[in-house]
Structure formats: C-alpha cells, structure tokens
Image (cartoon, rainbow, N blue to C red; front, top):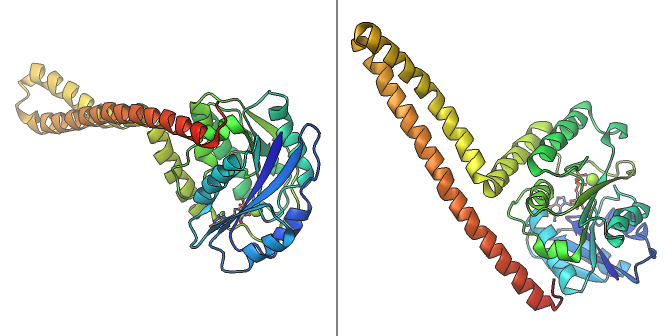
Length: 315
Ligand SMILES: Nc1nc2c(ncn2[C@@H]2O[C@H](COP(=O)(O)OP(=O)(O)O)[C@@H](O)[C@H]2O)c(=O)[nH]1
Ligand SMILES: [Mg+2]
C-alpha cells in the first residue's frame, strides 16, 4: 500500500520546509509514504527547496497555471507513480501532518472513496466573521448540490483512493475543491468528512483575497460546473422563470378577451408570446445540453479505460 502526499505550490519556498518536515513518516497499514510537489511556475526557489528537502517527485510548470491544473497534474503523476492512496495538502503548513492518519483511515478500512478534512472553521481565530459565515453557508449549499455530506467544502486537505483518482476530471480553472465534490457526488462515490485541527496562519490566504473576489469566483465555478453535470435542471429553471411572466400575461389577455374583446391588450399578448417562446427555447437548449452531457459521460468512460491501460492497474 503506497501513499503519495501531494503539495501544490506557488512561491512557497518559505513555508514548504515546515510543511514537509511535519508530514508523517509512518502510518499503520501503509508500506510506503512518498511526497510530490507541484511547482506551479514559482518565481522563487520552491523547486530547489523541494529538491533539497528530498521530496520524491516534483512536477514543474514553466508558467503559473493555477491550483486546479496543478492539482490535476499532481493526481496524474501520483497515479503514474503507483499510488494506492493520494492525499492533497497545502504548502502553507495550514494542515497538520498528524491528521493525515485519520484522513486516510476510512480509505484503508474500505469505508470511503474520498475523505475531506473538516477544519471546523467556527473555532479558527484568524477567520473573519464574513469568512466563517461564507464557509458555513457555502458548504451547506454545496452539500445540497453535490449530494455529499461534506462539512467543509473548500478544504484543501483531502484523500482519494486510487480508483477514485482515476475517475476524476477537473474542468475548472480557479479551484478544484467545489467541482471535485460535485463530481464525487455525481459519480456516487462515498465521501466522508473527518474533523481536523489547523495550525495558526503562516501567511495570508492567496486564494481568498476578499469576500467579493471569493464569492464571484466560487459562484461562477459553481454555476459552470453545476450546468455541466446537471444541465437540464439549470436550463429548465431559467426557462420556467422566463415563461412565468408570459403565462401571467397570457391569462390576463384571455380574461380581457372574454370581458371586453381584448382589443386594448394586444401589447400584453405580444409580451407573453415573446416570453413563452424564449422560455421554451431555453428548455430546448437544456435538452440539447443534456444530450451533450451524455457524450461527456462516454468520454469519461473512455478516459478511465485509457488510464487503466496506461497505468496497468485494472479497476
Ligand atoms: N498551483 C498553485 N497553487 C496555488 C496557487 N495559489 C495558491 N496555491 C496553493 O494552494 C494552497 C492553498 O493556498 P492558500 O493561499 O493557503 O489558500 P487557503 O486554502 O485559502 O489557505 C497552497 O499550497 C498554495 O501554494 C496557484 O496559483 N497555483
Ligand atoms: Mg492556507
């Protein structure tokens, strides 16, 4: 049983050493623990520091491609290196090495396909009230949308079994965390939450620049990802919203038609026709998007097959 711990890094020469030293050297039920660093086009000495520390695998991007791409490249490399379990942790020493054990335990016991560390944000001192509220509200929305029971939706502390990692695809650019959960739920994989503690803040968050920036980015990601996985629902909701005023206008016209011949109400009839047509069209787009989504599912199946062949571990 081989565990690879992957750490996505963008300019982390300062905090990478402390993060690396804190990682567990031994975990019961695991024969080999290796570390992989993804250096996402850092302009500092991140890669040199990683090498000096004796990190087993380094994936280097020449330019900064963002966390989602780094996460994806890390997973691929871990699979290629024969990982049975993959853990993702942050480079800023936010998470504790000793929590990796409880994080991988449910996978080792065969109770989960993926496990997400719950930072229990209520107790984190350096989180502002806005950030805590957002974390709570956002996580509950994502629980509903993804059908998973994850307490902390944007936590970067996660573990995946090999078979789960083989099934993952990351389409978004900003952050993989939310998409990852929607996908896990969509594929009916078993996701567990385990409570973890976090270390004090070593530096300000780079991903959470401000509440508006975070909301805008996460909302855009959520909408895109949700319409990728549930297109008919998203389009139908928009379509029905567009049709509603038309329906009201139409009923109003019918009423006046019988009361006074409807002559003065042609405007509302025109408005209704436009609104009903538009709404109907949007629903038809939804059906088309749903058909395209079926294609995505077929492509995903092919990808799983191809990865299986490439890495010689049939799933
Ligand atoms: N690959 C990559 N990783 C990044 C980027 N920005 C932040 N990260 C990494 O993502 C992790 C979390 O970043 P952090 O700033 O601590 O965000 P937090 O999760 O809000 O605390 C760290 O390991 C960072 O090095 C980026 O542009 N590219
Ligand atoms: Mg952090």
